[in-house]
Amino acid sequence: MAYNKKNYYKRVIEIQELTKEYQAIGLTNTKIFNEHIKDQYFICKRTFDEYLGVPAKRELNRLLEIEKQQFNLFE
Image (cartoon, rainbow, N blue to C red; front, side, top):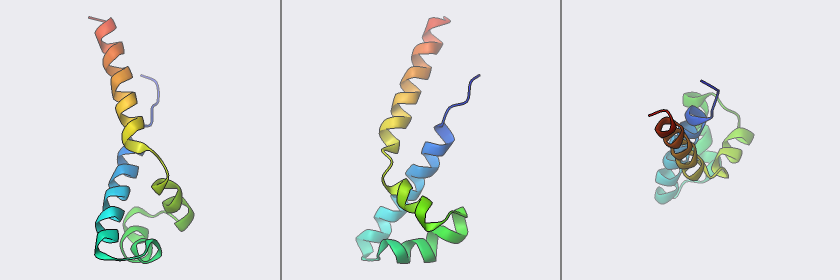
C-alpha cells in the first residue's frame, strides 16, 4: 500500500486539541508549547506553529473517504 499521511494528521489533530484545551484556560501558545508539547512530542516551536495552521481533520476525512472508495472498487 502506498504511503499516506494518516498518522501525521492524527498527531496534528491531537496537538491541536491539546492546544485548544489549554487556550480555554488562558495559556499562550508559547507557554503551551514549552510546558506541555515540547517534551512530549519532541517538536520545535516552528513545527508546533505550523501544526496549528494545518486543516488536519478535513484532510484526514478526505484520505479516509478516498481509502473507502478504493476499498469498494475491489469488492
